[in-house]
Image 1 (cartoon, rainbow, N blue to C red):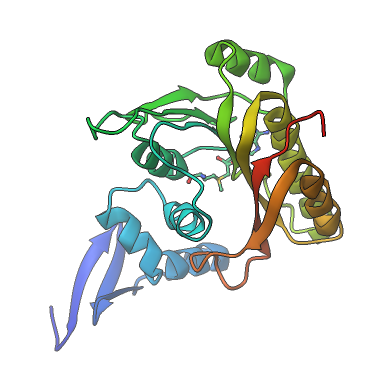
Image 2 (image 1 turned 180 degrees about the horizontal axis):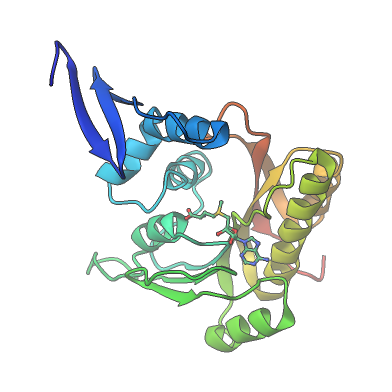
Length: 246
Ligand SMILES: C[S@@+](CC[C@H](N)C(=O)[O-])C[C@H]1O[C@@H](n2cnc3c(N)ncnc32)[C@H](O)[C@@H]1O
């Protein structure tokens, strides 16, 4: 049944009503409150719809696109390590911007390594290491082996632990992941390379920012528009790796 400006359809078994372009769930009785809230948020989120339309695996793609637009991080020919890559939208963006799939014949071809502790479905143009916990020596050795001595232009970390809801604990856990990515970046980066890591804001934010300043010429904090209002996430964007001798 349709009324003016509204239509009803089914998305994954949920009856939704599209009112002036926005999907609103209508048959949520019997579902848990948390699942109702999640569905509401997903269905009314313009970035979720945009990601579907532009063939990105998730809405996070728009965060990296905006960070790149602001800070000019990725360009054709670069070698990129994407930590915490699943489901794969950052790697999709990185493949496109570095030309890792060789789509632009006139531009240099980059390389994108996508790593996650979860499974990653193949990403066109990326070298995928799924089921690989980045904090382990085994994963980092595997990655070094794939790099075969090649130095890296950009290390990205969108890694996030399973949130417990205990703010300080979640903050400490995500900062530990960012430090794991940073430590690896310091070992494998070219001079002038970039580093981007997500953290949830908290007591160690300033410390990691200061640590980054020891190794990178330029460190900025960014909160892209696609970050949800209620989230404490922010991205540390460090550019101009000084090299370890400094
Ligand atoms: C927000 S998601 C990343 C989304 C991704 N950037 C994208 O655009 O598709 C966070 C990811 O971090 C991964 N992760 C968390 N801890 C990790 C670890 N120790 N090693 C590797 N990946 C990890 C999770 O499995 C999850 O897939």
